[in-house]
Length: 474
Image (cartoon, rainbow, N blue to C red; front, side, top):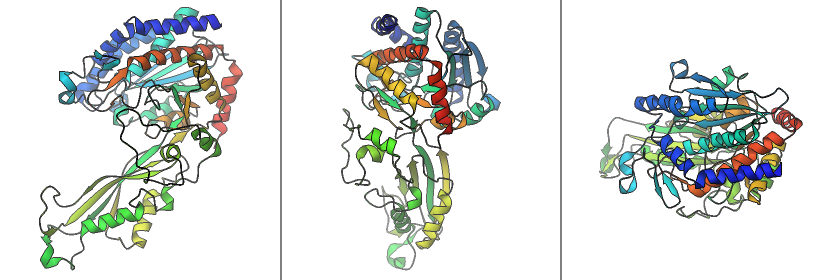
């Protein structure tokens, strides 16, 4: 069994070293699958037709397509390979869409739709987010099947086509197709590692909810000399309203915007995390945020209230006038244990009590938080597998600071969620010059091969016990 595993890891390394993976990635990147444009959604269909569906059929999967599900913006592909009722089932996930290409912004005349290799970097839109990542997992399944003749477990692989615009209808699709998506564990690959050289397992994602504060007090502006001291200034009012929610050092002042606490298992996992800036990262501000928490706790286990935009008048060409209106756009990034259902009412009560009855609260987009308990048995299994491949313990994050639709798999489907990213923080996803590191892809393919090999070797009770544990967790 150990020799088979070693042979599989060698085959994974050769798949990258031979140039085969790079050639595959070039084909994937060539499809401009922008989820924000009609043309991109046409390209998405071609990507599924030409690349993804044939890849799963070659794995002996049955493939169900749900293009433009219910006439909406999202499309879903579900590939299934069933090998035995007594075997564990894994649900894998990826997204086939990408953000806008931003063609004019790429350095040196690069095209987002043509893979270009420069040193260890493979440049191209979707190379890191998410085509390169889900292709790593598909190739790992192929290599395992070629060497074993079977996977040794049951597979369900879900690809969606609109993650970059908020995964519309994903939760509803999962709920309606619950029986098709049943599994013992969820394994997905998206987002970055903690650092390029640090294989990482994360167990969920922070949620987010956006809202605007608006003081629309009068039509037009009035001379600041003739009316100053008589007319309420909406810019001053909005600034003070924001400061009553989060102070000038990033401390949230409204208790209803905070979580109930940090679970011991989460705090224990974060004690092992040392946030070292990656090359190109900005220097962090030591005086920002709750100083009673470690940097890792502030990022992964606590809430932040960020001002995304703040505006009144014309800052590029101010005039001597009191503006008539002002607006601030805020976003709460939150962890499980936060009562977001009562957020609007809590903010409204707070502003009224502070004398800001003239400030309107307008709620925007929201997405839930989720987190698998780091003590869940599947976490120990996954980290053990990655350690067996690399020879060192991987980083375990209870959740990432950003957002992914992890709640769909954790809460809608009730699965233990294991995310193993195959990218790095400096990959420039969502920006020009997005790239995948060849070294990370090589190691990622080995990690995926080792993980799937170990899933085939795992006893069925592991999966059943861990799943029941996850479903019974609060």
